[in-house]
Image 1 (cartoon, rainbow, N blue to C red):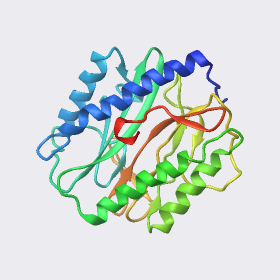
Image 2 (spheres, rainbow, N blue to C red; image 1 turned 180 degrees about the horizontal axis):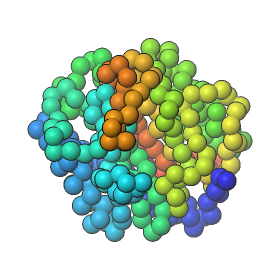
Image 3 (cartoon, rainbow, N blue to C red; image 1 turned 90 degrees about the vertical axis):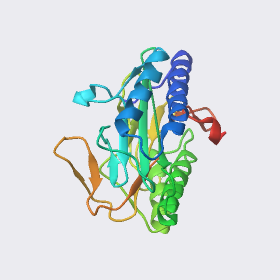
Image 4 (cartoon, one colour; image 1 turned 180 degrees about the vertical axis):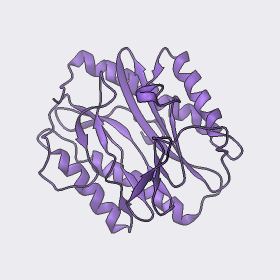
Length: 253
């Protein structure tokens, strides 16, 4: 059941999504060598609470922290830890979801830590371009499959693989709603997009194989071959004429 948001619900989605984006902007100066992912988690937590919201991941199906911090070969759902201290050359994805006025806003960004190799910089750049290419497919009458098709084409053209085991999702009153937004696929397949739908587009792109494994903690997902993975995510609204990026950051405008 795919929910169509009313104009009032869309305003609430804008507000929570704006806070999620602001959280990523706030944390950026702290993402540097010598800082632990636990410190970043606490800073994000305090910022979200201070702004009258709740961090959606905290205690979600038992997840123990307020944001996900996925470092280097971690694809997604990395758990912040005092042991994970950033070093020069790392990449770190911080995934923020805010719960404000009973609505969720979800976004993430892969940050470069210090001096990152050109090979990894290109991976991060292409991953962002994959997300944006997917977003550009959003319009009334389009199909969810159109999104995955262009992401897969671009990633493969650049020599990367696309993670298939995890995907984007509808979002609103619930953290995860219908539809599932897979990042591979065929044009003209899947649910048809309609104005008022809100969902995330969040491709995970790998330097090596698409295959992954989950650690014993039940959350942390790593590339099976140990090569780096990058991800970007926005919450998107289908409008009457196309799309609106609800979690857009100032740097992207």
